Image 1 (cartoon, one colour):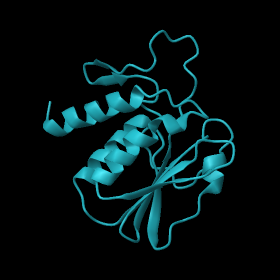
Image 2 (image 1 turned 90 degrees about the horizontal axis):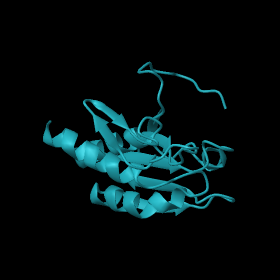
Image 3 (image 1 turned 90 degrees about the vertical axis):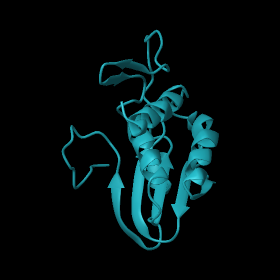
Length: 160
């Protein structure tokens, strides 16, 4: 395994360990704020009524706008949902696919880049979508990429 893969798995392990069910996304804010700040971003929490708030980060002005959500679907009766398991090249844990894996990849990419970028990590996507509804496109954003699983097929529009 390469150093980048090790770093990616370590980041994902930390993210999966935080039980960010809808309404509890704030539990991840300190970890994510630290990682985003280390990558040169200014970070703040955008208040969103009824939620933990959106985590908004910017490195410079303009650049791409990268958006995803912090909350995960409830684990129901899973015996150990917040511990990442690695079975060969498969990563198993609550949110590993939707969307903590994408957040880990985003953090790793930010560590290895220096250009301007805008990031929005929203709350309440799995329930009522209040975090997304509260977003405003950052000034100068050159386009947006929503980090959401799509079976590796680009989706150029999204309902909702």
